[in-house]
Image 1 (cartoon, rainbow, N blue to C red):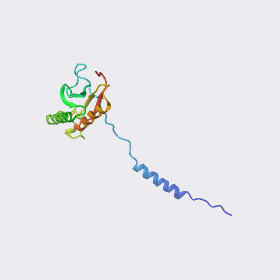
Image 2: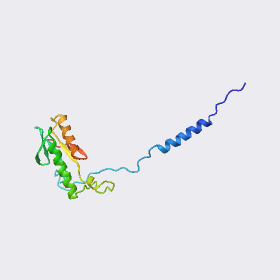
Image 3: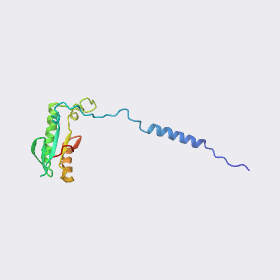
Image 4: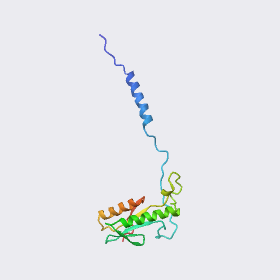
Length: 153
């Protein structure tokens, strides 16, 4: 009596077709990687760039934008959001573009302005207050948003 033989040729054909399909569909590795590298400081040490926006949250929950006081409190952030939107609109109107984003040809002009905002808060402040300020800054159109941790008062 003869033993039955399994014909594996159709199985191999199907596997090779599936392999080719997965190779075509799978994403290719990225051809480039865009990184933003900070510029060398031009002014004396400790002096921020003129386009730098720093939102400071005081111990009493009041907010300051750079040296401008009276832009709200951590639980009433509407004034801060409006002020930041005005700053960004002025930068678009003045045509002041960011040094790091100016060479990016894929971005529209309104996205080439400097929108980086640093948030400085004391360590004793609760998380919710800082989160509300981060949300307000994000709502104004800031990107990227950074927390300033060095040189806290």
